Image 1 (cartoon, rainbow, N blue to C red):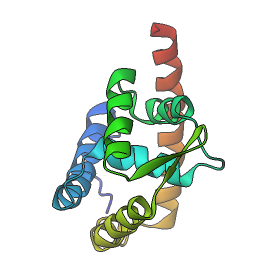
Image 2 (cartoon, helix red, strand yellow):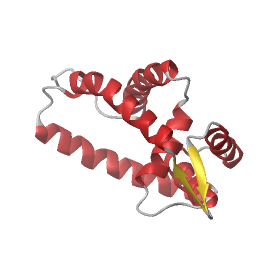
Image 3 (tube, rainbow, N blue to C red):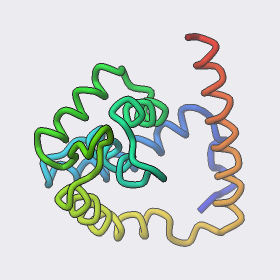
Image 4 (cartoon, one colour):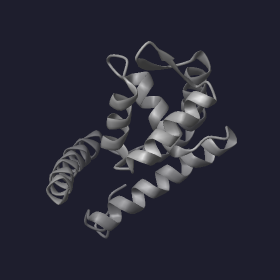
Length: 147
């Protein structure tokens, strides 16, 4: 819950929250022998409105993780080698095993997420969502200017 002594939102506070939540997810992923990058890549393939080509999937993941394209391609190759993704013509799609993995990780992380987000007022979540969306938009603009 927010208090009068809570720090103002800034890059450090945002980073601490991200890494704390990510560490919970990575703990669950480790039980499945998976990495954060693999989960993000597999989820991007599974939730895409239309099947992605390898280049399209890599672009989606790069947009999310801001990772090196070579690292993303290596992650895609790992998922293909482990049959969590397969080629369907020119597209990459999750296998049943890939979808089962995503479902298992979601089920295992759900209780943690419920406790982490519990009792935060809806108005606070809405305000935080607006601020984080704006920060993301501005940071992406700055990153594009650097490239």
